[in-house]
Length: 129
Image 1 (cartoon, rainbow, N blue to C red):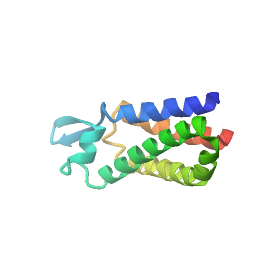
Image 2: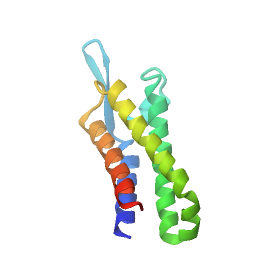
Image 3: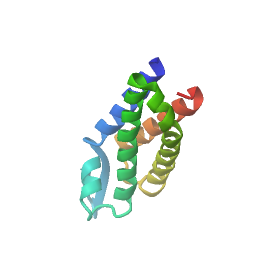
Image 4: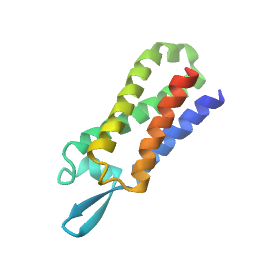
């Protein structure tokens, strides 16, 4: 049960991190700080990066909802478990792609966001929650 609350906490931190500056956009010598939501909704910054960030955000929301369901209705969670594992693996892969393709733009909080994704996937696979 404690690991479920840890998963919920990780997902909440991941969703909250989208409100802060996770990236910098470079125009010449000028650095423009960008929040996660700006990187998603403003097409002039990152074309492929916004797709990656949308996937990370949607999977985090789905994972948070699934963990809440696991605490309240365990039998419904059992039906969602394989789908959730698939989405967590997709989120981990997407996080690696963000680190690979957008790594030069990431702020420290963006790197911590990738760390939260890895920690969440590790907890899920290690403890088979």
